[in-house]
Amino acid sequence: MPDVAVLAGEPPLTPRWEPWMRAVLADPARCAAAIDDHGSPVNLLNPEPLARNATELVDTASARSVDLGVFFARKANKALCFVDAAARAGHGVDVASHAELTQVLDAGVRGERIIVTAAIKPRPLLHLALTAGATISLDHGGELSEVAALAADLGVRAVVALRLALPPSSGVAPTRFGERANRWLEADLSGVEVAGVHFHLNGYAAHERGLGIVAACHLVDALRARGHQPWFVDAGGGVPMSYLDDPAEWDAFWAHQRAAEASEAEPVTWNGAPLGRVYPFHQRPVRGAWLGLVLDGGAPGEGTIAQALEGRRLKLHLEPGRALLDGCGVTIARVAFTKHRSDGVGLIALEMNRTQCRTTSDDFLVDPALLRFSAPAGPFAGFLVGGYCIEDEVILKRRLTALQGVGAGDLVVLPNTAGYFMHILESASHQWPLARNLVWRPDVPWALDAIDAPAP
Image (cartoon, rainbow, N blue to C red; front, side, top):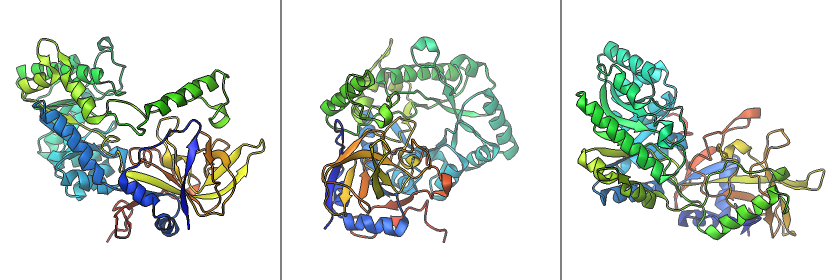
């Protein structure tokens, strides 16, 4: 019988496993059958936690008399089961491409429940958004002119949000997204219906989100004074979540990593690589508690930020991706072989490539599980490597140890990968097939998500 083990990092970073994920680990044979049927790796998805995560945000806002609209950021995961889950729970969808918008409309989501935030908006995307009645987040004056002209040609109204760029003097980092408030107030807005003010900020600081909301409220005031009727402020995404429950493990890992980078401890990363840009895999507060901090922050002369929104009768919109997908998926890959590099470094080769669990972060700092089918063996320490023909083709940059051994045919389960890790950078280089996406159900076969299912 196969058994469940751990691929432990050094120091360990123990993941939080949802109950449904533990049920998956408890059925290794079913995992192996999924790999046999669909190839390695597979992404196993469960959309049910999405509604729970969204409700946490809505309830936090409601407790402060703020009406919150949640728009699932589809770029975080392409699977359509999450679009369906968001729609069933009464939430909207944030789309970033023509294909995403087409699929969301085909799934039955109404245009008024969609916001288009694409950084680049080709004419076909704008045409579809306008005819569908979706809200378009305008990034700059040229986009405003194009949308107004196209709407006039089509004979439809253009519902837009003005994307606001906060000035560097506000204390936030410079951004490529949006225009300063004075630029929007100087623009000709007569050809569009300004429904809201939108902004995008990097990072997860509650204080900075508060600054953005206050600045957006001030732009709303100026727009209303000019006869426009914006009714929402959209604070974008960047709602934080945590992959790890134990802050001591997170601190211990970084203490060791900093010592290794200073040549004061043994390196535990691939070729001693530094980790300069990583997600805060453990952080507090997250999600609802974080939003509470944002809304309880001060709005000069107006009380709290929640009161500033309520006093203007403004709805607050958020576009979470990762935070809504917390607990919604795992990635399962098969071990092809183990060996040692020419200098003796251990290698655990997986039938996948590094883009199938990768974001813009330097590494995925969470320990995987190991479903063992191979014969018992001694401990094996090494790095997960993938199928691309380059020396640095590593799945995770940390050295992992299989205390009970690891061999060909075993399965590695990467936890909680639904938010960005599955799809944001996936690549079919070498004609390596993209991972198939299966929807988990407890007592029925795992079926392909509609994004992969053949057209009827």
